[in-house]
Length: 277
Image (cartoon, rainbow, N blue to C red; front, side, top):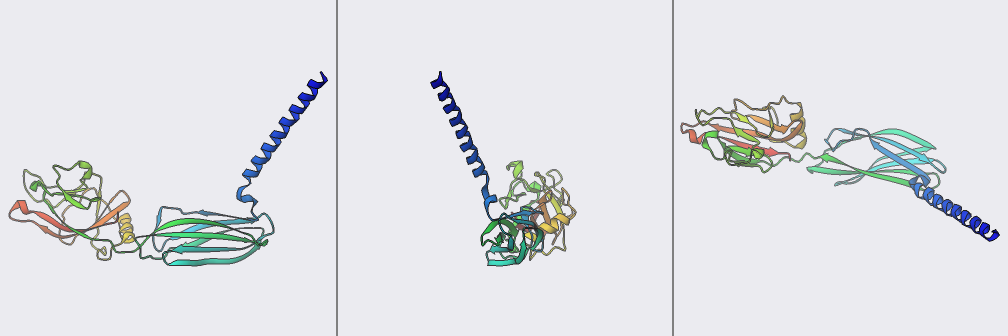
């Protein structure tokens, strides 16, 4: 009986020892970055997928020291133009929490990826860094393409697809590809000079828009603020038309010429399209 008791005692205590060792390992693995002398946390308060030149990106920056105190904080960016230091400030406190605003500059690329580096320095000589990337629309002029779209009763090349940037045939194309089409009818063969959409495209006539210098930013901002409609009527020469889906701008069209011919089969629109997709 004494032998059995000793074996039970040994087994019970070994099991406790194993539990203690496992618990210690769990605590050690959960420590993470909090074991560093200094910690830095950053949140983007007005996060969105893309920012425009002139907008602000607003950061909430928090830092605290586990040992000593936070001596300074540095903020820098890396873009296609190289590294830029935005902030290098002395703190000398156990903890700090502040707002930092970044004014988005203009870039020459269509899309610029701006990488932000946030670094906190500790009085012990150690430091911690956090990095994040935000995407910026550039101001490169949009590429233009020229198209001729015929009246509906021509029954060929009388519709337009935005994604493929090409004229298509209303009768043979899938309806999900018919973004813009002429709304004249076969029966009357009267050129109505009106556009509709099978895919929910919205139109906004904006003849004061700077078409020649159109870029992602100008098209997007103009489209969002414009009065939009599911159809475009009374189309005429030199009309400038912003197009999009709900609040997402897809491009801008300049109607160069509307040909209303004596031969109805030659009725057509000649336009220039600049996509933002």
